[in-house]
Length: 450
Image (cartoon, rainbow, N blue to C red):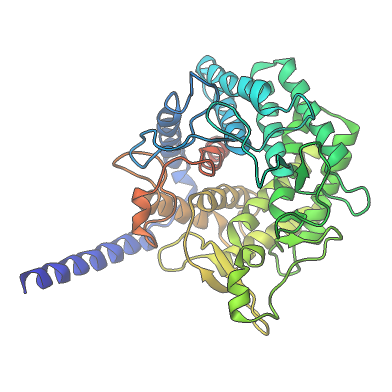
């Protein structure tokens, strides 16, 4: 009986606590006067996060960065090294060096990763970057083969370009150029445009897909756009410009739907994969290939505007219009009206005008990207009925309430309002690093400083 009473008391406390949190959020209306206070909070959070990652994750024995870190910030696991994770650290450290005064500290951290990309993850025989190696640097095969990906190579270019901005090391720019040319020679589709995701070691693309996955997809494409944008900032090459402009148009005009969300996977002819006419069982089984990814949509809105700006497209109202539609669609249909934050996934079933939330979790990266984009749009459309600045503030409050670990530091894997057990999930893995959070915070800090 006593145990039952305790359970009831705990449940009551949790209900009161959640109502209290929500009431505080509802009462807090942001104004432009809050900008400096928010900037200070963000800068403090960003610096603390950087201190948690570095030098902890530097592998001083075999090079590169440790990837497996538990929720207490202890190294724990196999420590395999994926090109995406390694390159994202190079970018994050380089970006921190450009943002803060202690440039020398972050330059050394970024250089540590650059050497690993150059000496271990670049394939000196066939070109391109390996996708995955073990801690010692031995290539890990997939089904007996060495598989390379456009996605991984794109992030290598991304990190190298940022490192060149910080260090002015011409060898880093040269490696980024070599990677671009290798990718363009092997992965670029001369007939239908865009890039094939999967390649054999020698660069030969899997034009019909690989292991049940379509040959082209939104995620590879948006991050190719992102990395080519970063490279074009430091290398005004005509072919690079042509490919960057092409990717912008593919994402804006083909991948993004009329409603303002992106289709996810495609045949080489850019026919979207859809399971809307399938059974519930088959739709559920193929969720990964066909759903509304609110986080990717709102992130891509920012990436499109960044690419348009770097390309120097004056009065690019077409891209701005589509980007705004993507942001508005996310806020209208992916926003949690109870606790704030954006949901991970929705679905347009047949005959439905609005998407149904089919995945109500809130992963860290999507929340970070949403915050960055909302702030950008609050400056572009200060009087818009969507009230982007208020949404930005609510998103920041959500992150502080449900995503920041105040005991051990860093960001949870996802919002603990939906999944309390996220408190005990790893702070680092080959798929979780400080790239999304660092970019969102640094962009927001700069934005709020203006």
